Amino acid sequence: MTSSSTDSKQTCTLTNNATGESYELPVLDGSIGPKVIDVRKLYAETDFFTYDPGFTSTGSCESRITYIDGDEGILLYRGYPINELANNSDYTEVCYLLLYGELPSAEQKKKFAHDITYHTMLNEQINTFYRGFRRDSHPMAIMCGVVGALSAFYHDSLDINDPYHRMVASYRMIAKIPTIAAQAYKYSIGQPFVYPRNDLNYAENFLHMMFSTPAEDYEISPVLAKAMDRILILHADHEQNASTSTVRLAGSSGANPFACIAAGIASLWGPAHGGANEAVLTMLQQIGDKDNIDEFIKKAKDKDDPFRLMGFGHRVYKNFDPRSRVMQQSCHEVLEEMGVKDEPLLELAMELERIALEDEYFVDRKLYPNVDFYSGIIFRAMGIPTSMFTVLFAVARTVGWIAQWNEMIEDPSQKIGRPRQLYLGAIQRPYVETDKR
Image (cartoon, rainbow, N blue to C red; front, side, top):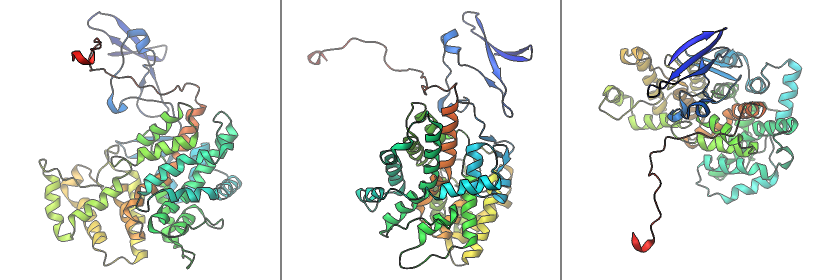
C-alpha cells in the first residue's frame, strides 16, 4: 500500500498483486493522533474485508470526548489534561465537561449539581427488586440486573430521538448509579439501605450510603471524600475501550440507554478490563509478606514463570499512566488519614511500590505502578471489600458511557454495528438423513 497527496487530500493505494488492480482509499485527519485510512467502501469496491481481531487497528467512530497517547502518557478529557482536572476540578464538573464539551460556569455548575442531586433516589419499588438476589450474589451481578431493570421504571425518558429524553436519562443514570451500587453492598452484608442526602456532594454521598447506618451517623472524612472524588474523575472515561465499545454497539441498535449501560457494566465485569485493581489485592495476598517480595520479584523477571506482577505497566500507556501520579498522592494521603501502620498487606504494597520505582528491571521497561495498583490499596484502606472494586469502576465510568452514547446517537454517520468475519468453517454440504449418518 502506498500513499499519495492530491490537492491536499491524502489517499492510500491498495494494489491486488494477483489481478494488478489498484484502489484509492481516502486518508482522514483527526485534530490530533494517527491518520486513519477510510475503508468504508472497501468491500463494495474490492470485495475484500479487513481482518483486525479486537479492532485494535480500527477506528470505529468519530469522537470529540477523550484522547489518549499511550506512548507519551497523555490522557485528555475534551482537551483538558487529566492531572489538571483531578487536582483542580471535582467529579460533578467533569461530568458536565464530558457531557457538554465545556467546563461549566459557576451558575451552570450549581444547576447541574442540583439536578444530579435531586435524581439520586430510586423508585421505592426498586428496593424490593434486590430481594430476588441471593445475599452472597456478587455486587456486579446485582448491578447488571438492577440497572437493566431501570427501563421498566422510568418510561418517560426512553425516546432516544428526543434530546430532552436523552438528557433526563443521562442525569438519572449518573445520579442513581451510586445509590444502586451502595445498596448492592448493603444488601450483601445484610444491612438496611441508606437513602441519599441532598446536602452532600457526589463523593460524600456515596461514602455516606456505603458506610452509615440508621443506628449511627457516619462522619465523612474530607481526605477520603477527596480521594474518592479523584478516583471517580480518573476513571470517568478512557476512549473506545471494551465496555465503552459495548455501550456504543448496543446503542447502535436503538436500545434504550439503561439497557446500554447494563451492557457496559457486564463488559466491565471481565477480569481483563475492570477487575485489574481486584487482581492487585489478590496478588498481594499471594505474596503474603514483605519478606517474600524478593522471591516474587525474581518470578516476575523469569520469562518461563507464569507469575505476573499486577498493577505495573499498562496495555495502552507505554511510558507511564498519567493517572497514577495523582492516584499515588491520594493513596499516601489516605493511608496517613487512616493511620494505617499495622496492616501487613498495605505495608507490603508500599514496599513493592518502592522497589518498582528503584529497580533497574522495572525502570528500564517503564513498569511503573499504574492507577489500578493505587486504587486497590486506597479501597482496601477505606474498608471497601474487594468484590466492590469493579462496582466503583462502573460508578465512575457511567458518565463516560453516557457521553459516548449521546455522541453516537447524534452522529449521522453511525450505523448499527455489524462486524465482519473471516469464515473458516465447513463449506456448503447437503443434509444427511439421520439413518444414513
